[in-house]
Image 1 (cartoon, helix red, strand yellow):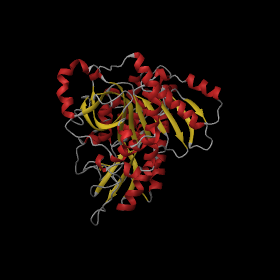
Image 2 (image 1 turned 90 degrees about the vertical axis):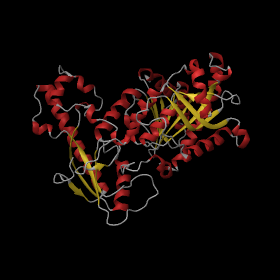
Image 3 (image 1 turned 180 degrees about the vertical axis):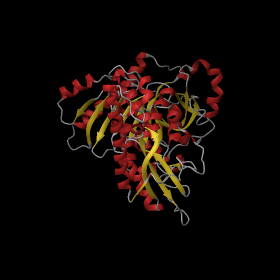
Image 4 (image 1 turned 60 degrees about the vertical axis):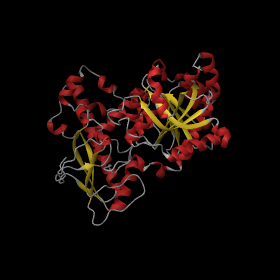
Length: 492
C-alpha cells in the first residue's frame, strides 16, 4: 500500500492501544464475513461490495524519522535499519498480543517510532474465518460458487519473499515490518492443524522435532509424570485430535485418554505440554525425510518460536563411534536439495553458540558424565543430510564428498531443519543418536535396533528437554544476530 495513503489510518499513543485496536479491527472483519457467509448459506444472497469491503485484515504501521544517528542495540531484533515507514498486515492479534507488545515497546522506546493502525487492502480468505473449517461444508454451495462472492486464498499473495530477501522495494511503498504478513500466517496456521492434528494455539515456543514415534511414547510418559507434580510448572498435555490430559487425573483416566488420541490420522502428530508461564514444550514427530522437515518448519515459523531442536537418529560414519553415542552437529553437508533455491548449499549454516553449549551442558546433567568420559559418547562434527534413504547404494560416488566434509554422521532431516532455522530466523540445533554404522557393517537390523531403542531413547529425549530448560533463561541472547540480514524487518 502506498505510504502517502495515511488518511484511513489513525495514530495511537502506545503499543498497548495499538494492539487493542488491531484486535478490534480483526474481530470486526472476521465477524462481518462470518455473518455474510451464514446469510449466504441460508438465503443464497451474496454480500454487497460495501459488505465485502469489510472483509480485510488490519494493518500496523510504524514511522521512524531519525533525527540523529540510530542507537546501536546488541539485541538481534526490534531494530530499524533506517528511517522510513514500515508496515505489515496482522492476523490473530489476540494470540500474538505478547509478541506484538514486545516488538513495539522496544521500537517506540529506543527509536521514538510512531504507530498507526488501520484497515488494509488485503482481504481475509473465507476459509480462515471459521475455527474448524468444517462449517464451510454445510449446504449445497461449492467452493467455486463461494469463490465468486468471497475472498479466496490466492497463492500469488502468499509467499516468503521477505524472508528470502527477494521482495522489491519501491520508494512509494512501506518497508516490511515483519517476515510474514497476515495471509502467509493464516495459511500456515491452518496447515499446522492439518498436519499435526492440533489447534495451532497449542504449539509451544520451545519445540523438539523427532523422526521416530518411540520418542513420542517417552515424551508422554515424562509429561504425565510432570503433571503429577502438584508443585511443578506444567498444567496440561494436549495430544493429537483434541485430547487433553489435565493435572490431577487418576492413572486409569490418563491411560484412557492416551489410548483415545487418533494420532495415526495425522501426518506429523504433535504433543504439547503447557506451562503456567506460557513457555511450554511441543514435540512433533515429523517422520522421515527433508520434505517433511521443510514442510513443518515452514508453518511452525509463523508462530515465531524461540527455538527448535532436532532429536533423532543417525548413522555413525566413524569407526570410533558406538551404537547409542551422540552427535552434536556443528556443521551440515546439505545433500537434501530441497532448499537449494532459497539457501544454496554453498551458504554456510552457522552453529549457534548458546544452543551448542546448552546441549552439551544438558548431556552432562542427564548422563552424569563429563570430560573425557563424555567425549567418548558425545562427538561434535558435521552431519550429512540426504534426500535419498538408500544413499549407501551410491557410496562410490558419495565417498569423496563425505570424506572432504569430515562428516561424522548421516541423516535425512537435520540439515534441512537447520537451514530452515537460518532462513526463517528461528534458533536451531541438532543432537542425534547413532542407531547404526552403515560404513562399518553395523546396519540397522530388528533385534539390535530394538535393544538400542529401549536403552537410548529416554536418555536422548531428556537431554533435549534439559537443553530447553537451560535456554529458557537465555531468550535475549538466544535470538542471535547471526540469523539477521542487513535489510532485516524490525520484528523478530
